[in-house]
Image 1 (cartoon, rainbow, N blue to C red):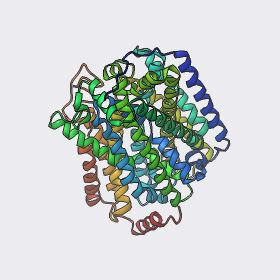
Image 2 (cartoon, rainbow, N blue to C red):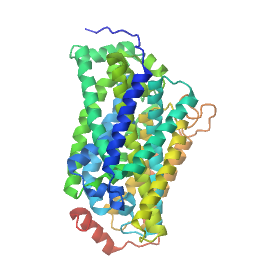
Image 3 (cartoon, rainbow, N blue to C red):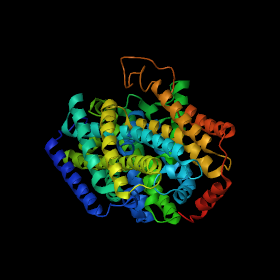
Image 4 (cartoon, helix red, strand yellow):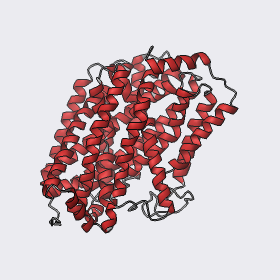
Length: 530
């Protein structure tokens, strides 16, 4: 039996939405301020003094990763594309199970603050740290684009803003608030915001899921049937191929996206940096377990929310709203709970975006201040207070870049943009992390070839792909200079980075240091000296 639902959209009240959102921002800013009383040292600012437990860090990890892409982008992708949209959730979960359960402890034991600590451990420090910082900044920028695009669409929906200029102003305000989080709170304040946000986000998603089950007679089949009836895809909404099955190219795009999703998580600098906020490797392992459990529950909820949005809101209304696909979850909240629930859901999603962007900004600023300023310019003898000051200045500059980039990609599906960021991360970092940990012969030349080769290949393929030009949903719709057929370059750029690292090592003049390699192996496996 199919439940019949009204198709009319309830009226949104921007005043109520802004009030709920404002209260949430004020509360989280207060939490950030209270948590930031001791942020004078680099260990406090970058890693919160390694004072968090595995449970706390695991929930914060899920809060860091359950971003706008997870809540808004995946729900929208499921509502519009059905089965294929849920592939993002599957890819993320598999990545956490495979990658971080294997690598989290090793990386935590080897580094101190940044990914550059791991990659440069047994290499020549200046060139490798510079390469690691470059990689971190580029990956962070790509990941930020997704969050800023989600923020623009979300607040535009709250305020019923359709004009590009007004949405650009909204994105600018988001960027400014995000910089405030970082400048005031550092890693400790940001972590507490992520913990609070993860709890509220999970509660909100669970309650909406329970409501949807009740609305459809506690039958998931009824939800699926109603979604298929309202979708232009019909029954194909519930089958593979709604987005990635039209021809051979889209099937390859699916494989490429899957590869990026599964391999990219363990290469994200802001995820790796979270493991330095716990005191030892045991707590690092507990962090991953807590994060996986939390995200498993949440992604099951997004499956119901996505199909529920297709059934109740309908794809045509979703695509015509500000934010397009990204507006599916907020519109569903508006339909089932009115203006107040919309305000709550939007505030939670907005806090999600702010917390994730704050974590990204800390990672990027820490990488520049610690790897470049402290270890290259100051040769490891930087004053901690000045290093933190450099990190804060870097955070402001990164915020400005994120605002500009968010305006440029406004309207793109944010889950898709995160897929691109993961492809960049896996292309630039994964081969080098694995080679550094497990290949005794790996040397400085191999590291540089792997980082720059994978990074440049990925960026060039994106530039000349349908993402930028030559497609109806491209960033530049009026021109066409693409020659690479895939929207996600991971299928080509990730293996290419492994090849670059291998040949760089084999043909490079640098020789691996056996003593440092042995020390790194012992340290990664035991945690001695970390």
